[in-house]
Image (cartoon, rainbow, N blue to C red):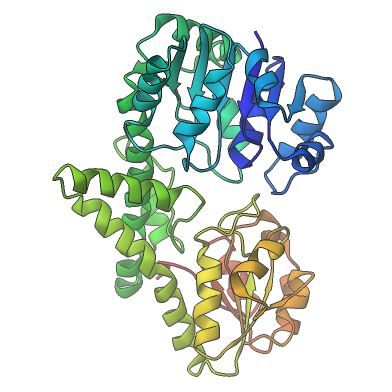
Length: 422
């Protein structure tokens, strides 16, 4: 079985590399010859944990190849994964693929799409007289651990009425099925809705714990300990129940917006989702207010931010709370400096050169009035905080991710402020 992946963006690269790592031959399509060449050389435009090594390994052994001719690409594959990062023009792209595809082949839509998209694609393909089955196959990947999520999913969700397509997909995912990963087969519309509903539910869970974190600060309770106790309840579970600066990422806001629009168009008001989005959008303001209160006067103060990516192990700054915080501090008159292991080039685009970018956490801390942990990069835990303390103008740390050991830092003489820590 030969697989095709249409798309060499973030999603397409994760999918093609992971499928090739299953031992299957995979051809990845991109009409941009220079970009395809860079990908074949293992030069990725984004940072994702373990992804570059996986791409290079599979290219080297010949399982992962790149193609710029759509007709050749479509004729080569029995199963084609449509894995663009955006659903813009996705139906037209699907028809172009189908026009040259092998009769009886399968088109697997993994691009996050609005509910009803796969059904429309299937109808248009049939109307064109093409024999091709469309499967809606949402992937639940998280930036920074996408490779791990692909290889150890909670479930494999297939939206199709075709038993042949299900058998083909099970053959592709045989390594996962042998580990006991369950397969859920449903309609395409249900599969598409599951993706949006899952994102909305996680967003609501994060918003809920962040609101309670504010209450914890007022009543001198500890939100981290509270979240741990809540998470041990089997009805709740611990994942995504840690207080912090809110959620972000490339797909999250788009999927919640799509779900809200779908509900509105069908006369349904998703008030809980609306409240969750409102809470999340206000988190950076709450952190900024906390810093302003601690500094007493923000104008002219040196604010150092460690971490600009929206989460560790990725260079994505989409909806990053650190970026939002930097903008608020700049607006308030502070001078902002920042360090991130990989996301500085992307941050420069968002912040328009108003921030001083540093080559290390230690450089960022020099003469700063406050050190803010904005991204939970593991390396920040092992910093030499005695050296950090000597560098800071004021030994003040605001930890928006509750990453550091507050007891240890206070013992060193720091003023340590977390989120929801009484």
